[in-house]
Length: 310
Image 1 (cartoon, rainbow, N blue to C red):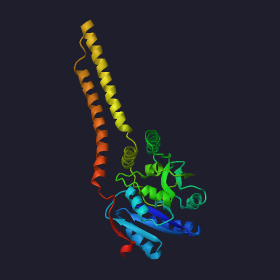
Image 2 (image 1 turned 90 degrees about the horizontal axis):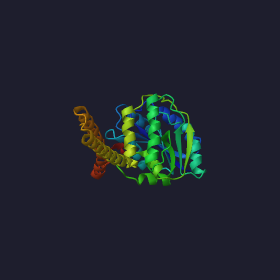
Image 3 (image 1 turned 180 degrees about the vertical axis):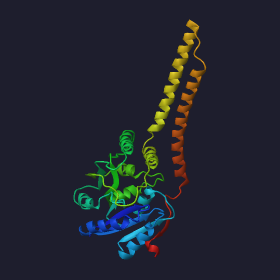
Image 4 (image 1 turned 90 degrees about the vertical axis):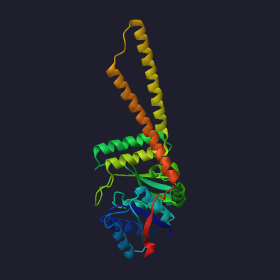
């Protein structure tokens, strides 16, 4: 029988994990396949690790990985994918916003439908703040226009992949990871399955607006150099405008003897140019920081313990 690995990054999800385990095992047992569930404890402060251990004692098909501290969801997904032994591997959230009921359809698409990946996307953002939804849609529009990555609006990390695609994803060993972009960049034939947004079964979201904003910037920086070109274009435009204004005021002074306005004009020009320069420096600095982190070659995560340490 095929082996399906379920990778579940967890950060303070002890309330959701038993519900998730029950729902996923019911779905997979009906598929007549072997499976393993890998909970990745991302330095949680609650009883996530203890819950994972209890589930492992109850069912040896449950495995767990515990980080030495919080490294982020991207690190959790990477660790789970590396540990997965399955012929097919799925990435899911423990909060049940990724419906386990979709797993049979996803498995059939990859097993029998000629697809390498079955991925999910939300058709609605019910329950999310309006402002967050607006900026999320804008992000998908922008990144698809300025990058090579194919990122579908509303795409979730919830997907089932063939072994070949998982190996391709793992071959990208970059430190600054943006998995939605990586999944799209590696290609492979993907079937998109749509579903209506589902509320969390327990706990609170760990994604604030600021964290989502930083994550979106990670994605743009990871898969596009367009911001650098925009910075250069802005520089040329400002120089051109400054040259035209200098000619205009020079001719005006020579012909009409009317000097240019003084202090307010100078202050406005200085502030404008200073802002443009700071934006350019900031963009270059962000790319430089990513390069700096890559060259240090630090591990993306550090494992404190797994079920093999028992």
